[in-house]
Each structure stands twice: as C-alpha cells, then as structure tokens.
Image 1 (tube, rainbow, N blue to C red):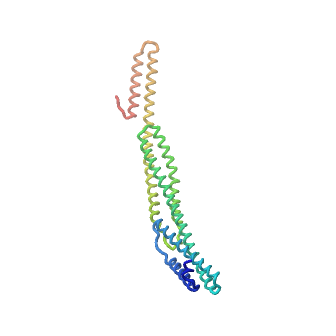
Image 2 (spheres, one colour):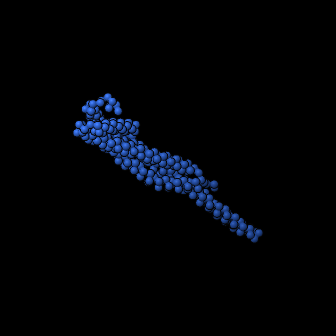
Image 3 (cartoon, rainbow, N blue to C red):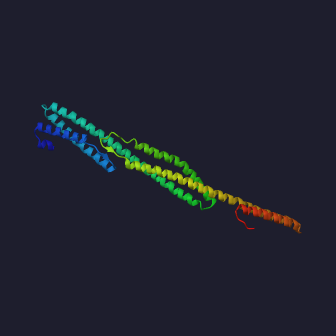
Length: 273
C-alpha cells in the first residue's frame, strides 16, 4: 500500500521493486560468518524471516501490477522469475537453519540426560562405597548394585557415542558456519566422566569384595568356635552320664579342645593362649 501511494507510476514501482530484489539478493549472497551459540542462530533465522517477508511484499506488488498493466507484462514476468529464485534460496537457507537448530536442541537434550545419568552413577558409587563399612548382607547387596552398574555402563557409553555421531550430522550447507565447539567440549567431558566412573566402579568393587571376603572368613571361624562349644557341651554330658567323672578322659578332652581353640583363634589372627 505504501508503494502504491508513494509511487503511482508503474515504471517507478518496477524500478523500486527491482532494486529491492537486488538488495535482498546482495544481503543473501554477502551472508557469511560463524554462528557460535543458540542466540546467534536464532538471530540468523529471524534475519532470514525478514528477508522472506520482504520478498513476499515484492511478489504481491508484482501481481498487482500484472493485473493492472498490460504494457509491463514482460518486465513483471522477469521480476517475478527473479523473485521466485531469491525466495527459493532464502527458503532453502531457512529450512537448513531450522534443521540445524533442531539437531542442536536434540543434542543438548541428549547431553542433559546423559549428564543426569552420570550424576546417578556417582551417587550410587558413593552409596556402595559407604556400604563397605557395614555388615556382610549390606555389602552383598552393594556388590549386586555394582554388577547392575557395570551392565548399565555399556549402554551408557553407547549413548555418548550416539550423541557424538549426531554432532557429525549437523547440516553443512548453510551460508553461515555453525561452530559446535561448546557441544564438542561437553561431549568430551562426558567421555572423561565415563572413564572416571569406570575407574571408581573397579575400585569400589575391589573394596567390597575384600570386605565381603573378610566377613565370610570371620563367619566361618565363628561357626567353627560355635561348633567347638557344642562339642564341649556334648562331651560334658558324656563324661557325667554315669554320675562318676572319668578324669583321664576329661584331661584328654580338655587338651584337645585347647588345641582346637588355639588353631581357631590363630586363623583369626588372635592369640589368647
């Protein structure tokens, strides 16, 4: 409407519209640089939207002129063809930029999920490490959790590799170069944390296995002591079953019990005799 009001002459309108198309094409062809963050990518997309809107205005004016003037048909057709080509180029660039934005958003979401999973791994490792100071049943359950974590780590590594692969699928046909350096650093950090988790898991597993083995050793020796006590009670019953005590048999039984107890405590590294 502004063009029609300020430029009633059809030739002036066509000259103006042609200059407008040339300016849009110049802006598009001059587009170059590096997009370093999401904000810059959003600004670039908005800039393309503005260019597309300007082209639509030009095309609408050309259609109006085409309907109202038969003398400028050839010029109008020429400008319409030019406008269509520029519009297609801008549209293609916008689609590429939107695709890039979508891939980057997906990457950030996937990275956030992996980072949360790693935080869970670290928490579980701390819990399992703390279990090494508790009783054998708790240690056994902690070892089972470590086994589950080891199985989960394989899939976790695959998730990291999938994200790295997705990084390499970013569109490369944009007139502006998209720099994924920050995301590359985040993925590298995820890989470093994975190595750290794997190392800590081995350390915690070894600690729990040693503690669990010590508990089992203690329980075996304790069971041996309890069995010796039961045998003693039984022998006392045998010695007193007839009322009179056979002190020779009592002496031999006592000496044998002392030897058994000494061996038992020696295995426990405790010397009471």
